[in-house]
Image (cartoon, rainbow, N blue to C red; front, side, top):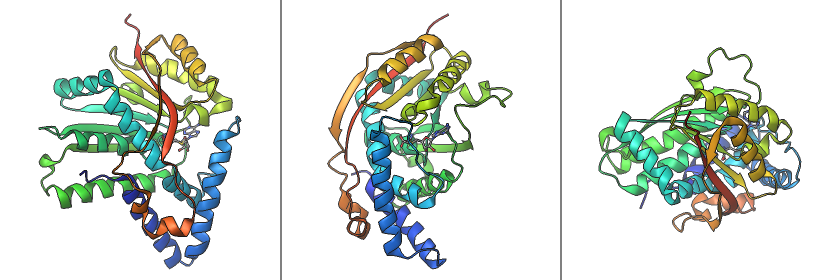
Length: 305
Ligand SMILES: C[S@@+](CC[C@H](N)C(=O)[O-])C[C@H]1O[C@@H](n2cnc3c(N)ncnc32)[C@H](O)[C@@H]1O
């Protein structure tokens, strides 16, 4: 049994957001739950539209709908990728053994879905020694930070209560930095090496989000690869829709990155994850959060010069 449970954590965070909004007299609970339902359905329509999605992440109720409907399944997919990609996980272990920590940058990370998924994977492995993750999260929506802080707090309190108050006994030690960045426009940065010199770069469900600007992202990935170390990995996770594999192949060619094979995956979330862990919220929203994915992943490595 792991301490980290996606639906349970999301239920706790959304529940606390609702209480705070109701207390401040901004909304009543019924209106909030109905908005969560509407935004969840709007987001899924936008992602299936075959066009640039238009999603108002700056609206707190839309972000709550994302936490409700999408974070658990996307976090589980990140966990699944590390569990099933043995080369990627051994690379992480080697870096930990060599440097005593692993640095990771997630692009378009939203509330920190990648951090949550990887934390659960590490907890599940029950290693003898903790893994130290230095996470950098980049997103253009500054307000995601409130959810990121809440996720960190939930992980922290669970480890503290269920494992020990002594952090050295935890499965992982986290240090997290986040920054508000439009990843299609990094022209004002002076030294991108400070951002991009990470061990693992994760781009999970971000290509499909910058649809119309993907050429600009491609140029930035080329820069990212220039600054990355020779062994650095680039993990792409994306919805299995036509066009994205070719786009990633084109990106890799331009950026001088060698790609692993593409791994298709169509699966349900782990059995320990139950939507009922959302508690009353599940009933009140009246729409099921997604619990399965149809996606692929691929890992890029910089070509040796
Ligand atoms: C579908 S969500 C993915 C979030 C997270 N990676 C996951 O897997 O759950 C897309 C995220 O990309 C962010 N985003 C969209 N366009 C962006 C841009 N140009 N620069 C940075 N972030 C962007 C959004 O704010 C949102 O958080």
